[in-house]
Image (cartoon, rainbow, N blue to C red; front, side):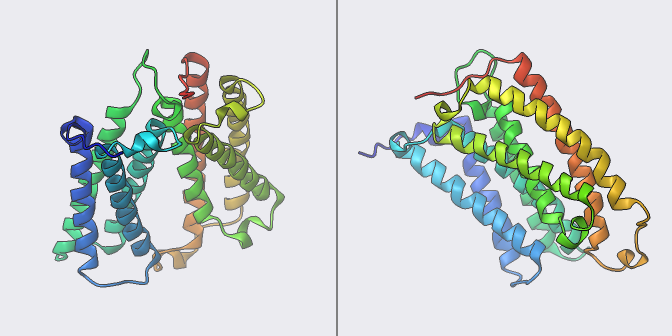
Length: 285
């Protein structure tokens, strides 16, 4: 039976989520009012704002009616994972949209960019509000290692978007790098899904030991990718002159993948350090 709880709306997290709804809705509305575009970056930005609005509204509604208590998932882990994912998605959108569409006399574009940046700040604030503090009993995805798992999976998705088959299919070294990205992404995704669905008991060994071992392995694998990817990608392959004239040059994607590989390596190193030093609290109910 649904029970209305107005305290969820006036609590700090509730207020932040309401403001998130307002700003992503404004961004979506401003861009939609300028008409439709077939540009893939435009579609990504619109999807991000719409997706974040819908899920944030759903979270507010379920907490307001207390229906979240009846769901067969770890609600704290779900909200923490979404807050982190939304932060990363809106951050990417806040960078991509002005890069490709802003101009000096485009008032609506500038307005959508500003509100998107404000939404990013609010989602980052939500992550800070619901993040588990040392000594608190909470779901795994509310801890720093859990939030890092969402970050690692998101970065891997960016890498996959930039990959082109006709590039990495030519060299076994690049194929190894793709295998590294895929294996690490699958494990991070499994951890997120198993945590939210309360299936961690299915792991064949203690979860903290499995997590630590896989993090160490991921660091070693990403270390090889950090060396191999740029070596095979840029050797005898300077930036084509045509890249200065086109907005989406395939060669630039190689640079993005290189940067994201280094970034994910740092994330896995930090994750490994936390897995060694911190006690991970796992919600088993």
